[in-house]
Length: 199
Image (cartoon, rainbow, N blue to C red; front, side):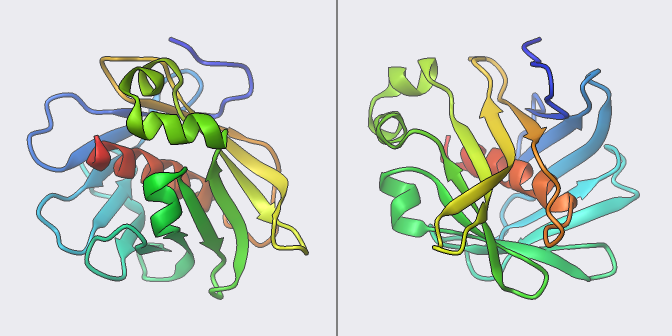
């Protein structure tokens, strides 16, 4: 298992899921601490993260505001409906260059960005299959600076070199007073879900 020092969470895809997709969220000892299910056949994407596979206790949900498209906005909410933030995918840039997201706080104000690292390699991954295989994706969640550009890193995400099962590890780098901690897990879950759908 390729777990590096400082990585607090790993998201791994469940085997043998016929419809939709499902992921386990694990701690550094690979103990399952949450279960993420992406519902199939939904025009508006609906992703639920629960404490375990029984899905009896929900932690948060991610729902697309509109029918699935390249630039969808996903609202992240607690079980009681309280919105803690949202993420909007930059459609054209994410489809042809590299995955990029705008991250909003509970009040719908943009506070951070989630962006795939390495613009040239990110571009090649979309069009050259072996580049995607030998150079897994990495992402950085960063506070938006006064100039509108990425500033202080909040978390990093990396996919593992694993041809059999998708894995994504998360390292929390800093606390941000305006970003709910669950938004970091939500970002990782959304990366895994979108990657799975594109794959």
